[in-house]
Length: 348
Picture 1 (tube, rainbow, N blue to C red):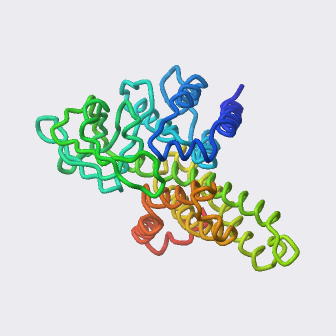
Picture 2 (picture 1 turned 90 degrees about the vertical axis):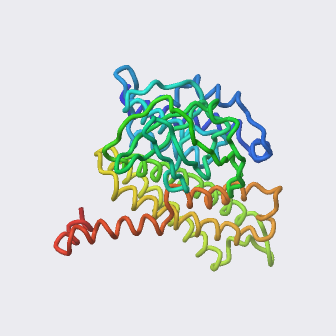
């Protein structure tokens, strides 16, 4: 069985599991502070969380192989940090760090995280918003000392008393974490941090892609069943145009995400991530808007499932750099290359 068959099989198994276990009720329990640890255990037993590890005895699947896994997680607004754990375990295996059991939390460098590594080897500073910190066995992030950058891991037990719950649009468990005076479990110097920033951006772009698909699916189904003036509202041309726009945004986001995965697998960390996250962040805004326009008042009620996906779209849009951040990164890259490289960069 080749790598693509393994990835397709795991994505199909994950789709079936989440379809059976995740619904509006389970998402509401998560947002109220509950945790379905049995779902995490089932996923661990499937082996999904380890497929991106790069050790000699690991599957070592790449981003292209695992793109659909991330999209499945977004499509179900998965109530657990599997996406973060997949990427964190990949980073830890590449850095030859010991990988713990259980879920991992990743500190987004773009989320007001100012963490320094002092001369005694202790961390100083805090991260304003860390998703899933209260679930994690370890937290993984970037620290700086002068011009140097370091990948570090911290035991969740060492910062458990320092977690301060934060409100977020997605309502997933999110905490501010004070790392001052904490000695990390491991520290590895990194000459290039773009892999982490770009990987987080592509991860979120793929999840946005899956969630956009779900919103479009819900909107189309509602438009075909809700009747007004004697016929389904989906028969009205104005609404058809809106749904077509949402579908195009969702399709463009999927393609941009897959392009970025190919770039990451080829160790090209900037351009693909910029295109994917910019496209996804714009789509998150537009698809959410159109979804709520189709549903009208019922779509904003807490009882309806639509908001579980649109709120996460807005949350993921902001995480790992929004569309403005990544458009600036892409623009700076083009400007630095010079006008003579413009055409080749557009057509490559």
